[in-house]
Length: 404
Image 1 (cartoon, one colour):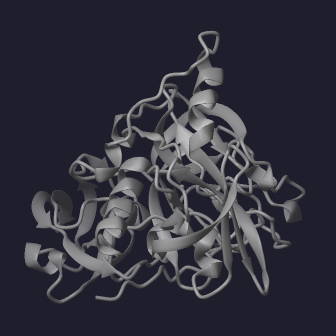
Image 2: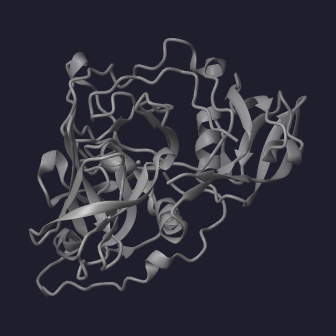
C-alpha cells in the first residue's frame, strides 16, 4: 500500500528550514536552525474552509512521527499496545558525582554528556540539530529532518559534550516518522542516555529539554508536560507528512533543538524534541519558542530505532481508510481500501469512528495520529457509529514497510 498525505495544503511556517507545518488545533513548526525567511500566519490561523467535513485526509493510516529539517527541531505519544522490550534499554542509570547537585542541576550534569550537536553540510548549505546517544559505540538517535539533506551526499559531523567533533554516517531513516539513527565514527566511549517510558507521563510533571538551539550546544531549559496525545500535523511540502500524538511541553524549544532530549527529573529520556508552534514574524509575533513545543514520545521513537538497528528499515501500522471530520465529532470514513485491515474488520464508508481503544477521536487527524502511533499488527478496539447505533469492532492493524 502507498500512504497518501492529507489534501489540505500545509501552512507555511517560519520556525525552521521546513516551510510547512500544520496541526489540528495547534499550528506546529520545525525547530530547525538556521531559521528560514518564510513567514507564517497567526497561531490561530487555520485553513479558510471549515475544519469539520472540509479536511479530507489520508488514504492509508500509518505509524509515523515527523518533526524538523536538516537544521534541527522538535514532536507523539504511543497509543495502542505497550511496546515489546527494547534493545535500547540496556544502558544503566547514572548518578551525579556531585553530592551538591540537586534538581535540574543534577539532571543537566547527568544528561548533558549524552546529548550531541549535529551539523549537516551540503553544496547548497546546511543546518544544525541535536541528537541523543543510545550506545557507547556512537549510535545516536535524532530527527530525520536533521540529516535528510545529506542522505544523498554531503558531510555529517557530531560534536560531543567534551568538545570532540567526528564524522558520522546514517544507519537508517524513517522520513514519515521523522526518526533517524546515525553513528559517530571511531567512538567507543560515548555516554548512553538512560531511557524512560513516555507511556508513564502525566500532565503537569516537570521536564528538562537539552539540545543546541541556534547552534548553542549544551543548552538546558525547563518546563512541564503541558498535554499528552496532542495531534500535530507537520510536513515540508515534499510529500513527507506526519500526524503525531505528541508530548506538548512549555520547556523552551527553538531552532536547533531538533533531535535533542526531553527528559524527566530522573534524567531519563521520555521524548525527542521535534516541533514548535510559533506566531510567525509576518504577524508581528516571535518566530522562536512561545511555550508550545512538541516531542516524539520515546516509546515510539525507540521502537523505530530498534527496527532500524535490527533490520535497516522500519514499519508502520496501517488501517486503510480515507476520511474527514464528522460534523458532530469523530472521523467519518469516506474510503475503505480493498484488502485493508479496515475492510477485513468490516468497517464501511459512512461509519464514524469515535474511539480507538480508550482514545477519543474528535476528527480525522486524531484518528490518523492514533493509528500511526500504534504497534504494527496489534489489535485495537474501534468504536463506530453506524446508522445511529454505536458498536465496537476489533481491528488487527496492518503493517507497511518503510525504506530506511
